[in-house]
Length: 203
Image 1 (tube, helix red, strand yellow):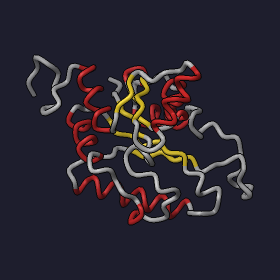
Image 2: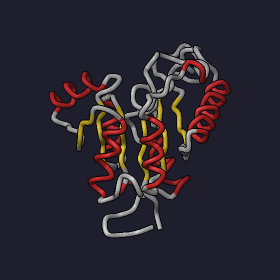
Image 3: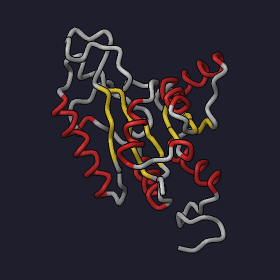
Image 4: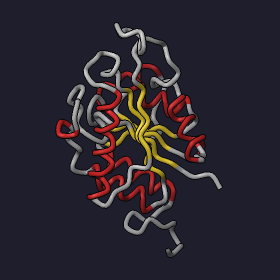
């Protein structure tokens, strides 16, 4: 049976957007980030980070250093009792001076390739999954891969909300924070917030 997932943007959604952090020490996870992921774990959603990381294309961080940062991030969540199931990152930028990364690629949000790859790798049913992010590209990414998009007002969320309003392409819900977004998803799915089970069911 295919699995449900909640796809999470990284910067501005799960942690503060500080530009292009080149080490985990520069990543500041929002205080509610750990609890949000724990709730998704208990509710049997895969927690999958999908992030555009053009800092690689700009020469600000190497792919190896980004991979280490993400390994440390997953370990940090594990220590807090939360599990990040997978992280997908797009290193490209059409304006890069490095020919290895200068391209119009299908993996850069809002194009859906990262989500499609995760669906194939992890046996995910995208139609029963969600995307949470703070940018217009996150919401369009969710729509493009057939998931339900949820906007958060952290990071660039307020700006994105106005852009989406003007474009007529709306998220299913706009939340103040990632935790509120997860609450909305659990309520929509009829899942108890404290137990991770459907209403009327026991573990």
